[in-house]
Image 1: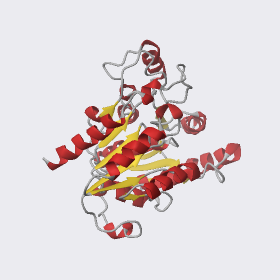
Image 2 (image 1 turned 90 degrees about the vertical axis):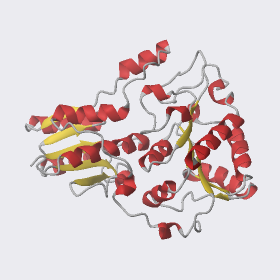
Image 3 (image 1 turned 30 degrees about the vertical axis):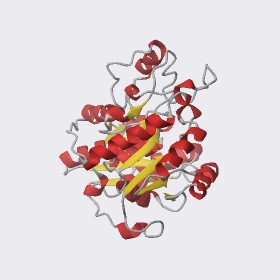
Image 4 (image 1 turned 180 degrees about the vertical axis):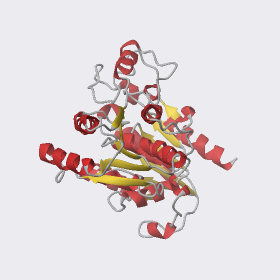
Length: 345
């Protein structure tokens, strides 16, 4: 029996994209055991995937922070008898664990993030054919370790029955169309201007038989979403009221999610909810598009300067963020309608 340690600490969206891969691999090799080392907050993504998958939750803010935390983790890993290490992150901490295990004769493999080809795509604006998807890069690591597997994952709730009663604290029985709106991202280059997004929210909130659910985190985001909830009808803001498991449950009942290039696109993908995504500084062809999402639902405009960043973390050289500002509110609403109409066909 092989014992495989799979390492991926962050970011949230990248960790979510690991779910289909680890499930598919573990399904093909039921005689082996797979442990996913990730941040404690992300643990629910992996807790119900299968009998041979478990989670090693890390508290990188406290207990497992810094050098002392690293040695605690490494000591624990060495005592667990892992035979293979799949480093799906390839950062300083995961490299240290990987090298330590290699010294003791464990078989290791790590992700090739394609940094050079991504930078070349940014520099040359060569986006077709698309670069290898992150999920494929994760699969490559298992291939190198000797665990090739076909993709068989479909939906997180294939493994756990949906219990709507867990949502009764924020909403009553589902009626009409449910639309999720996740207007935030970590970086400004990936956020549709909030004054324009508010117009999208206003337009959708006035539609008959429609309820909007707003998704965000943190105090500043909560302020914006609370204001929208107060100003417009048919809006529910569950921010801060649900843990990750219940948030995924709520997302699974949506008819469509409107998201930036952010974690909510990937969470919706894990529960087979179609996503209309808005792209600014980044681009779907760089390998971070939602799992099995329809490329036609990516809203973006062509500019000579775009994409300018792999992660959207660089300041706009034009200053005006035209890649986002020039996307009309109408085009977003229309694309959401197209998705809703397709669902009723």
